[in-house]
Length: 357
Ligand SMILES: *[C@@H]1O[C@H](CO)[C@@H](O)[C@H](O)[C@H]1NC(C)=O
Ligand SMILES: *[C@@H]1O[C@H](CO)[C@@H](O)[C@H](O)[C@H]1NC(C)=O
Ligand SMILES: *[C@@H]1O[C@H](CO)[C@@H](O)[C@H](O)[C@H]1NC(C)=O
Image 1 (cartoon, rainbow, N blue to C red):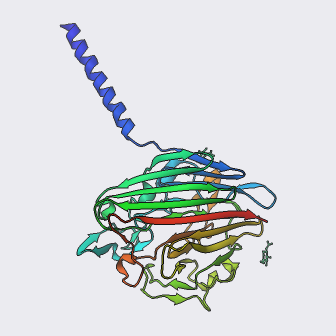
Image 2: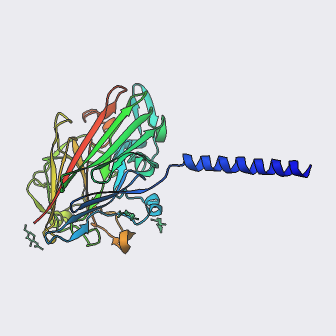
Image 3: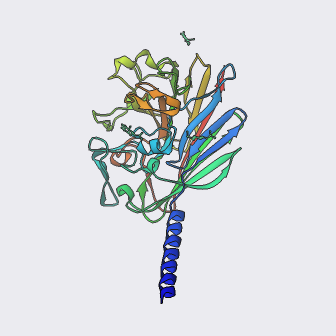
């Protein structure tokens, strides 16, 4: 009798442990992954398919980390400013947190003054991606299967993001998304904040910026497009010729947070988007992409954010250049469509090049 009770106890305990082990196995593991070649090193995590650091030499050959970020995953989970994250399903804003597609009105989370920002409360920058393939000296591919109705968006979507080293001074980001069963808007963006002097070197106001866009997309007080295009000519938005970021920033309500028209017409055309230079470190970043627009953001909203290695990031601590489609395209009939249908593939390419002189 006693023996039987013991046996039942041990079997039950065994089953419980097995079930727990199985549960842990299903929970995706969060890790850090390094890509390196020559002097260029990237640190990435599958939490949000995020770039944690980019290390490149300055003009004296000294290595420095030029992206804003955090020391550990708990801080990434707590992040509200999207440091290095891959944002989606629809980056940027959707007015009134809703849109209509094929006769259906979809209600989305209103996480930004009544509008939807960067895919909602739990966008692609807040989920754990799978690591599909990884080779330390060349590339990493993260994948994510987004569910039907995830953050209110229609249909299942399979997404893949690859970070690939090219030579010793460039890397590419390749973002691919395929709707499985329903048409859906897709607009992905890579949300790295750059400070070419080093992530802990203060503000970016003396960085020299050139943006190859002669028009911007004007927005209202809640950063929703008015639907018009506006020439940059004679405005503080004119970066067609390189100049210091800070030179006209105070003519604005204090910051740049605006989308530039980079590609008119075809959104498949690969072209140069922007150049950023810091003449203290001598570092230069060049960016190419196939997207219609780029969001230029000078981190006017950073205040005492605790970052890597004890750094404190403040206003103007970094520059974000997020290539993407135009904001609120789902509600703007004269903007290029972001609707992708089953059978079609969303493709977004970026190439960054880093030099120093
Ligand atoms: C990548 O970044 C994480 C978080 O800061 C850090 O713990 C890890 O050591 C880094 N990996 C490499 C190879 O630098
Ligand atoms: C999380 O964020 C809040 C507000 O930004 C901050 O006060 C808090 O210290 C953060 N916690 C961690 C663990 O970083
Ligand atoms: C950077 O270059 C600009 C001209 O392009 C110059 O006016 C400025 O003084 C330079 N700053 C430094 C720190 O060398």
